[in-house]
Length: 93
Image (cartoon, rainbow, N blue to C red; front, top):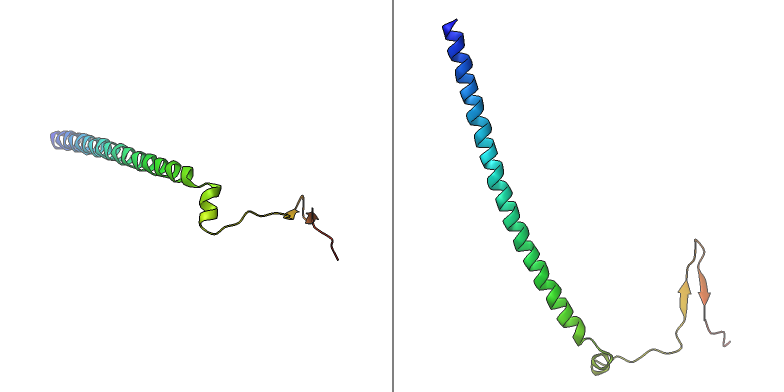
């Protein structure tokens, strides 16, 4: 009976140590995940800033300097459902 009691106490100590170490590993993993999340947020913030800086530079004058021309007399296709319809098309036949 004493042997069984020692085994039960040893099993409880082993279980306690296992779950405490598991909790410590989870806390460390949580801190690393937060640090990685902060790094990703700062990278996304930098990319957003770069996007807004670049989007301010896109102007009609920039398009003309690149050889683009404004469009005129355009026709658009509108598809309200399964069947497509053309609106604004020229019929100069």
